[in-house]
Length: 159
Image (cartoon, rainbow, N blue to C red):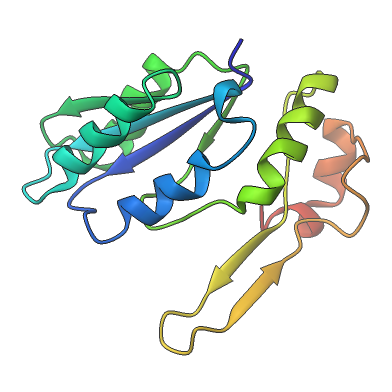
């Protein structure tokens, strides 16, 4: 069973797509990932890059080719095709921390949450400075009810 579907909406993303997909493929949990690249009418090499990865990793990476329907249309197409228990949208110019994927998948397999929040990193493209954004102050294992999350909206709204 695929535990999580990653939807990657991609429009003219040839500069970024290799880095994005490479951040997934060295993960020990790749067989539990459903990675869906939605080529949203790209006119560059995005379609051929996506096809190359889908061919090489056919058990985990798929491609949907469609005429341009915009970012939301690409996400919707990915949602329709997703088979994972959980769903995450990641843009083609993003990447995942490969070392964390196996831990993350293991955690997802052991819980039955409706929403899962994680910290994330940003990189300033001008300076190269990497900043960690904390979605919440407590440990990864803490579970919250919806009313707890809503009462602490300022702590969770960055996620």
